[in-house]
Length: 349
Ligand code: LMR
Image (cartoon, rainbow, N blue to C red):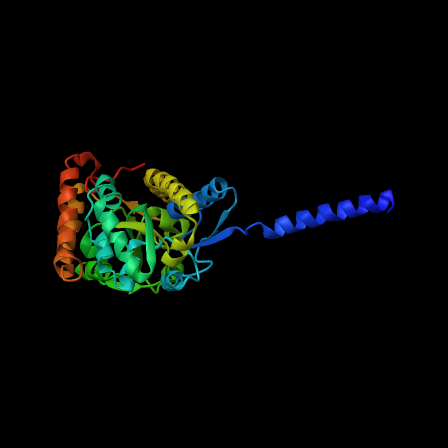
């Protein structure tokens, strides 16, 4: 055998070896993470942070593909998709778990249930939050974390300062029996629509108004078609980060551990930052000047609270009574520092 033939054979063997080792290398684990809001919202940012951390900390063994802005599933379909395993990960708003029969999650929709962020985080980051996430397992879902967005404001096509200003208005809402009851307590009509349809409904006049934290209103440009916004802070909107349970349990233990740590980091950043992002959204809305932003006085806020109190009684058969009472007790204890209360006059920036 000539020397050049030997060299060629050796090169051929090296190429084969390279090919077979790359063919044998495990393909990355792909986690499709679908959500309905824009990338520059608290949830959108946290999802991308989690994706970046997961890639870095697993050295590319896990790739989280984030589909924001309802680009993979709309909120109407995403819950079924995660149960079927057509998508691995979601972060639906807590209001949306009522649709799969988990009514206790609607406790988060009760008006003024949390007097401030401290009390809400004591619930989501404590034993009550953990017990609620456990309920998801019977639906084939594993709950991994809670992400904050913020307190909701009302918007409409006419000024809103006091509860009767919403009388007769048709309001786009998330599908939630508590939010329906809230609207009827105000004499308004609830129009449950998917998030991706909200802007069009407001623009065409199908809906007169809506409610959401400022970061959602601003990122969807709803303020451009809603001339009045009232900073009532009348309810909370936050999320549970969930995965298909079977998929999660099929992951290698070391990968799950790393992903849990990445999620803790993304959660902390989200929960520390979401208030600032909502304040910034209100500043942006005010400087865009398309909408008049009304800040009700503390006395006016008390009127909102009073008008919405009957919702509690109406929902007692639906949401566990002890759960409501436990949250109220915890909130009262933590509300001794009233300077943070959402019922004090909201700060103008
Ligand atoms: C809504 O439907 O208004 C919100 O749940 C959207 C979201 O996910 O923040």
